[in-house]
Length: 378
Image (cartoon, rainbow, N blue to C red):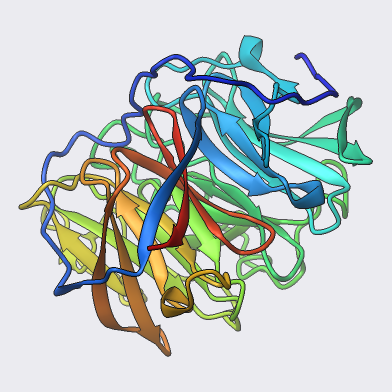
């Protein structure tokens, strides 16, 4: 591991990157009944295969690069790495540095990556005056991965102050080990832990399966295939998950801010609203709030954020998302957990890997070719 404590702007275009394969399918259904002319994509800089980002201290945005580096984005551009774990991870399959997060006080920084053996790993660093303290590093959680795909890897702190961790079903295809519906594994789940409450972490006492001897205490929700990106609505606290489909359907799942957890999103008995390969819909299945098929250009949903910034008033309150193969930015308008409108924003960012929400709640878009965009008024 290498830690650099000084940032300087870089000029020019960095190396073109290999694309991040999130799935193997090839089509999408156009989902927008209308287009809006409210937004533009402003190209800010390029990175080396960016995968994730997080609002950082002093108004910065920190960007994770898949090979293992973290760089701060500021008014001068993309700075030199403040963290480098590239000798501890690989980029084969869907592996690499997949998620980063700060706690609410910016006193701790977390990374989610697959190590050289492919094990999903979440590590913590103390942060002082906006600088990572390398000697404080500790491993919070690990999960063995049977295959090199469907790692999930997104991490974020919820409004409740707990750390949420998304893990895919373990990979291959069709969930061969039945992990999505198996409560005795962390794979195919959204986890909820308290990294500061114990060693290596504590279980929040109100987690839904704490009193179930046949379930892992860390589980918050299950029945997920590859929840590549998820977020909490900064205005309401609602949870939204973009879960990548197998062959036919991409889905976005939702839970209200007052949820007690325990939602079963259906995989691998269900793919979206549809039985998967003769599966039976679980009695407690929570169907997606939105799904789209693959008869068009899309193949892999990239979950985003509910826009809560001030620069684009017409976008406020809409969930912005995209697709890795299609690249068009789309929105969902929702009321009480029901989608009331789907829109095409009329802009395309290429192979969209991730969205980032800055401290000011403005949105950034990361593409696999390295492009970093900011969503601005048209």
